[in-house]
Image (tube, rainbow, N blue to C red; front, top):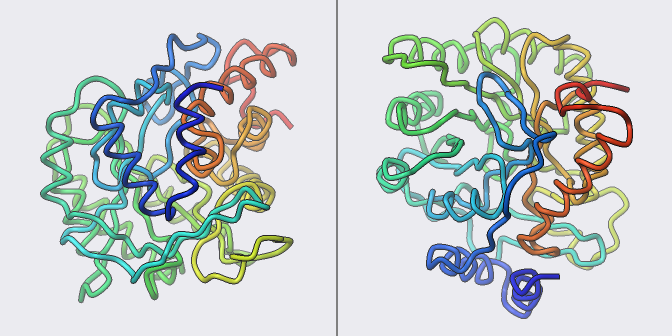
Length: 346
């Protein structure tokens, strides 16, 4: 265990949100780990994005695009910043972030707290090499939430490697209603129209991020809408509102649940999307990844790359190196020469 991992665990004496803010400041000051060279077997290309490895950092950790450089150096193959909204907003009242140590899980009801597009864009404009995505959302009090997504896309165009349209957070009232067929068609239609009017210098993928708590028939409808709008892919999934099987005292807190209890649900949902998509769009797997075995399960369920975040709360930033090492070993043990060969291999 590295000193960085020990420090991460020591931060558990602090309130979770205070610990997170301390971590961001330490990383910005240059105190983060260095992951070293990547195993070539983990390199892959997703929706035209060349990734040095397939393990990315999920949004929520670097909400304001402050530490994407340190996280790339820590060993992530790509970093997704956000969620960012056009205007700054404080989010929901504290406390709004809760550890569930017995379940190795986290519940949050942050409410898209962030510094807004201008601060976010100014930091992205200074980024160096590496794949950095922007997760865009809508302000809670926006009269036209779809317009907020279009605003985010336009303002960050040319600054981000890719975009994620986040309609799946359970912490903004009514947001998940955008996953219904008619609303999603309007949203993605307007996003696609804005994209097509922007200058194109190479491919800039746009992904849709979905919830794991979907009803029968919604998966197929979402896939067809994404394909019809010409988006590049789908990220499966965001946090869940389910509380099944939890043991921790904080299990009754409202908000989105992440961590190992989400793994099985999100992976089943990923497999359903893989079957419906049939290779027409790229899929990224998120939700519950804490080991190489978890990442491998997502890949074999249909994910071309994966994202993690909550595992760092309990394992520290060194978890990405351990996940990658174990994943590479599993790929080789099963005779695969690359991540791409293992995608969807059931």
